[in-house]
Amino acid sequence: MNLLEVNALSISFGGLKAVDNFHISVKKNELYGLIGPNGAGKTTIFNLLTGVYKTEFRGDSSAREKIL
Image 1 (cartoon, rainbow, N blue to C red):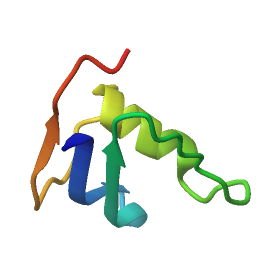
Image 2: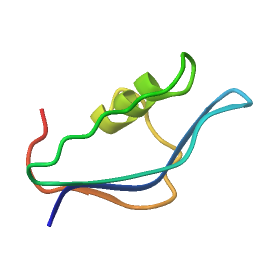
Image 3: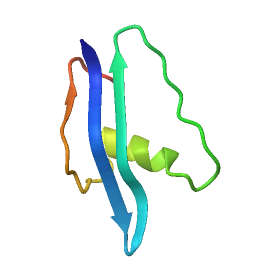
């Protein structure tokens, strides 16, 4: 069972595609890190997952338990 499942998460700012087709699946007792260079979209992904930004959502997502 996945605690968090996100499929096809995307967002654009103006004409710039900041995140395109992001997928993640996290099971209980798993630990993940999100790494990449400056400007890769790491903070944008966290802002999408926490609701700070609204997504151009094309897929589905679910959270089984409260994350924060």
